[in-house]
Length: 456
Image 1: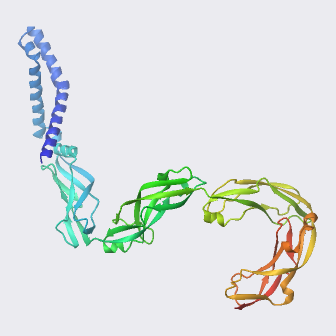
Image 2 (image 1 turned 135 degrees about the vertical axis):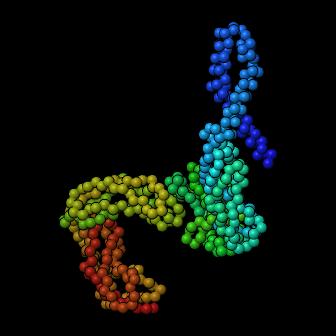
Image 3 (image 1 turned 90 degrees about the horizontal axis):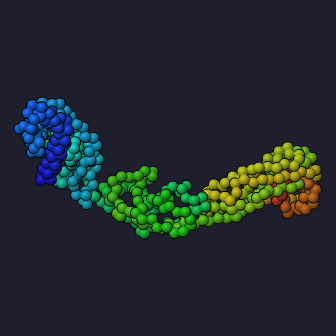
């Protein structure tokens, strides 16, 4: 109460000083000069002159004038005394209850206050700023209750309305359980292109979550949010991140509010590495060259490329394929191709490659009795055999430059049939042929065979 009185007195003193300065500048000083001029003109250095030259006289006069103005305001003589209203929006509500024992749902975060009264009182209320909204739940037990929002109303002469003035709340006992802590890494795209977070170790594996039984049943996970922006890592190494925020989520990944997590934050040790792998670039011609022509050489200015990414991603990549369109090609040509970055790779040492292709006259060579392989059969359930002995091998015609064909052997050719998603029965499947040298074209004289698939 004494603090409110002191605050009121300081406020009143401030108004008085402000009014004094205004009155002194606008009224007292000009009137004093006018009276001095009149007195001096009439009687020279008479009583009026002596009176106005006395500093105490001016102070008393200012005080009288200030009191007159204050009286006019207080008696509603001027506009400040008119009735008005003041809306204080989004005022915070403080709820009082045993937070260790209970969970309360339905408490609004804020409410609006409408003050009604004299403008001078409204101005004073706005300047004080001591507006408090509260919900007293200390005497309430478990269950559903309707409670009035209380307002402290620091200016008793004002009327007020609170919106909402009454709320429905539900009080439930607070329970707790332990939850395994996982990690969620944010803003990974802000990390250097050659860097990856290889490991995150938290200073604890479990946390305690507290709330009502119904809310705890919705919690599917509690995650520590490791933010790369906060980490501010520019090179490989080990970094310590303190006060990592913890968030509770439901099974759909939506954040659950009003869940108390103990502790509220954890410390994370983040290991950043720069794993890489060097793989060859494989140039793959696509399409059929012009009749009578064959590819002699394929050369590129980049033969290997360094990839940066997660170890698991790098392990699955053995080469990078770059396709060039040779359809209808009959003469030498230079290609400028973009190297497509594989999924999961963060960075590559090269993004473009120049490929030169030279052409020569086409010849052909036939390879007799290339064995047919069965591929992509579910060997745990089935076995496959060619229907006839003649269908276990095929003859293959290979076309290309003579000097390359002379170096080719039957072991460099692969004939196969794809048995993906096939079950038992006798099925005709197409024969496919490939070879180790992409400059050559391979064609099987037998286009298809019958395969007998049976259960093991």
